[in-house]
Length: 324
Ligand code: NAD
Ligand code: UDP
Ligand code: UDP
Image (cartoon, rainbow, N blue to C red; front, side, top):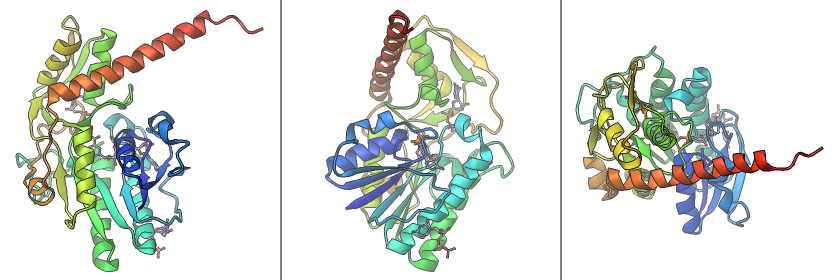
């Protein structure tokens, strides 16, 4: 099949591309490199089945494809709040364009939505029926409300134009290739611990999240795309941890001497989050397989290798003879 992955140079997108390429598909990676990076997809550059398109999804584009995985959108609060107007444009105009494309070429369209559509949830754990508790005018709204509109657009194109849609609500996912400056909690703690810096816990650390390892998530996304079930489907790991527990786990695994610093809790930070994955189990026969300790270990190894490489390259630069 010819498969388009928007946001394919990003964290989840690049892991998805690895799997699709290994299955022998023709893969088009579309990305504007806002938070994505060429190094994530470098190994496919000379492969005849792979094509890279530098493009912004807020602009229309005409392509011929069979399936569209629509992931383009910054996912870390730090990055999506940096230019909130751009974030909402990406979610609304970008999704509109990709749905217009899916309609024209009759491609199956999968939207990467988010657990953030549940906002600061009053129902725990969250099922797909829960309609959420989202602040429409807060600093997270460009993302939460943007994704809610994206889901609405997908369902309206489905009802009005018969577009074949799939919707996945992704819960906190982590793993190798997250950016060092990504700003999300797992990458922050791992990078801080490896550098011997204090781990920054926001608030008192009693807020909870449930962390899914990236290979489990990608498996679930591909199962949804190729099933008959439209969704929305929650995909995430139901093992719930407080942020303080996560900090202590990273501390123990990397550097028990590193301190924990408590910082102010950002506005509208959800107090708890845990997916009910009954739908994914029933319709996709899916559930996570990688426990937190194992996933964290793999993530720590990846960051350790990258930080060592970066330090070595800085050293090489300072030792290089002056070019006059
Ligand atoms: P990421 O920031 O690593 O990847 C996003 C990719 O989209 C990047 O490569 C970025 O350059 C690209 N992009 C952003 N705006 C674009 C635009 N206007 N045009 C073209 N490309 C653009 O994030 P990720 O963690 O890989 O997330 C991928 C998707 O999954 C996002 O849609 C995100 O909302 C969703 N999601 C992720 C998580 C998670 O925990 N990782 C949770 C919920 C939802
Ligand atoms: N679009 C696109 N590529 C296509 C088809 C459509 O980018 O191959 C864009 C199109 O420019 C429009 C959006 O998708 O902005 C919605 O398209 P649709 O055909 O549904 O609406 P219309 O063009 O009639 O407003
Ligand atoms: N967080 C933290 N320290 C950090 C980064 C994040 O304590 O350095 C907290 C953040 O306040 C939130 C949780 O960790 O309660 C998850 O944050 P993240 O940005 O990873 O994802 P999201 O809030 O979107 O779930």
